Image (cartoon, rainbow, N blue to C red; front, side, top):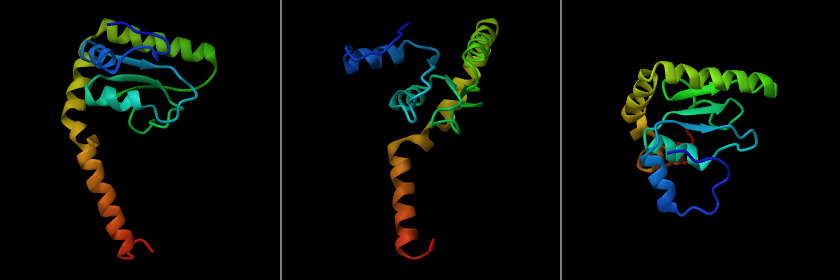
Length: 130
């Protein structure tokens, strides 16, 4: 499944279908700090290639994806093409990244995140961080 550009005119179901049929998610935005589609990609165990300036930099790296250093445009193009070429040459890279995402995704579900937020709140109100 190949989609590119800004997808304002797609329904939510069409976006979910695209994720279900995808093997790799590439986001090259240099202005988005914390894109929702990154979480959706994680939820669907789809590895990500992203620029390192993303607000998700700590997550988008091995074993979950490939981070491209945010330098000059020409270097980004070279690094991005090399990353995609390495995946084409060795599709097992995608399998390993997807398997790791499948093992780790429970940590990123809302149910787990809410538990962390509640614990942080309780610790704060009990003066454990003050």
